[in-house]
Figure 1 (cartoon, helix red, strand yellow):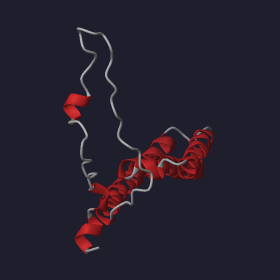
Figure 2: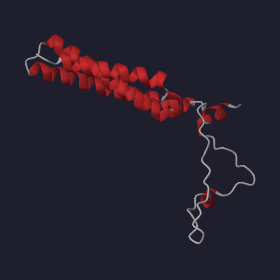
Figure 3: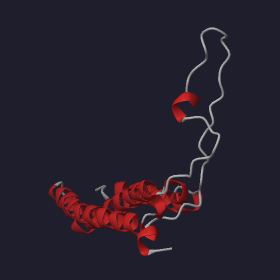
Figure 4: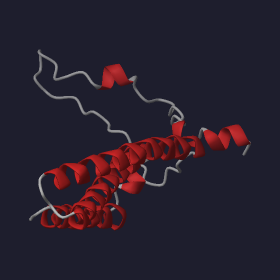
Length: 145
């Protein structure tokens, strides 16, 4: 396999099968004269689609930009809490918990956008969700007086 074929592995279309109807004809509803519905074939679900390096690179760049934005949001949130008379140590901790919450949430969304069948597995999305929920609870607890 060439390098270009490896990079475009996530965007391959399935080969047409001989003798198969056109997609537009297969999606027609029931015929008005007989009232019998026509069967519509569904596309096969493939879970072993490999993520191309281009998709992973774009996702990593999006995550990097988001993490930088979340860092500024963390600082703004901590400064807001200090202005509300929360101790600076607790405000800083709450800011970091906010950063972790937003980072885990955005990581799950970007992974789902890159390759949903592969990364939406419970073993991947479950820990990200658990970390996000724990960080959200700890952020709310840390931001109290």
